[in-house]
Image 1 (cartoon, helix red, strand yellow):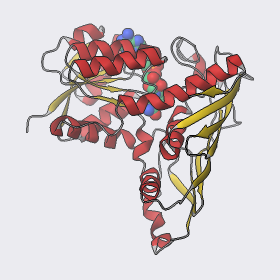
Image 2 (cartoon, protein in one colour):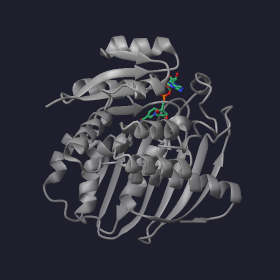
Image 3 (cartoon, helix red, strand yellow):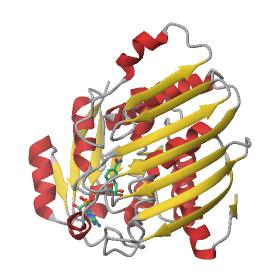
Length: 340
Ligand SMILES: NC(=O)c1ccc[n+]([C@@H]2O[C@H](COP(=O)([O-])OP(=O)(O)OC[C@H]3O[C@@H](n4cnc5c(N)ncnc54)[C@H](O)[C@@H]3O)[C@@H](O)[C@H]2O)c1
């Protein structure tokens, strides 16, 4: 089979997860990379054996051999670049969050639909083995009635982290700890618990010199009648402590933890069967909070193109967590519960 040619736009901190996943995949070829800082584009080209490098993404999109682009630029640029890629007929993998407004996210989804290209959003933690195991338990109805759940993200980002690039922590290009760091776990929370009915939130900025929040909390009602809590921060001293997802039901309790929902902390079901002894195989040691999910996400995306089906996390999935975070911001500003 002919390989799919990939291009990466934005050669910064996360792009290497895309480059490695593309290089590992026998159905993919890294054709080209782009960064406004030419040195970064050249570094990526040399390190990952790409054929071309660009400093203007419009030029990259003109490459007739290119099939798929991975967008790894600051969040505020995702929608514009994704739309341009779709119009150029390229399939789009976009880093999270897919956009910073619902209007931009909707336009990106529409552009991909209208141009017949696939769109995937990088919520790679959905592929973590403990998360997949939880999802299968949920789909099998093992929790009975879901009662409540919480997403806890206790991470540490020093001022240096925010100071390393001008887009970090800004309203126009990033958002705060909810929109950037915690959106992964917020996505998992809503994926497991189903549609949200309403949310009330508070955000604050206590320590970091940035435009957006460094702590955010919210309470949620789900349409099912279950309740939820979000606690998010990037100020937990002195290092990342945990990213934990707690799901409680009538017949089951699951707590996934570790630094990035990579471990099963608690796994209890009325129908506990034989599995307690085999939980170990679903634990995952990860070198950092990015985990390994990009490999699975890119493999799924390639299959979605070949089989002409929806990617596992398409735009309509990716927009849900974005909407929830935007509604927490809205609630904070208006000091009102936001009804979905
Ligand atoms: N999925 C995850 O776990 C995960 C983790 C980290 C970051 N991210 C997301 O990835 C995105 C990038 O984050 P990062 O930490 O890699 O940022 P970064 O600042 O390290 O990298 C961004 C790169 O984009 C380049 N760039 C900026 N404008 C450009 C343009 N017009 N054309 C081409 N290149 C341009 C910058 O020069 C920089 O090299 C953000 O949206 C972030 O939320 C996702």
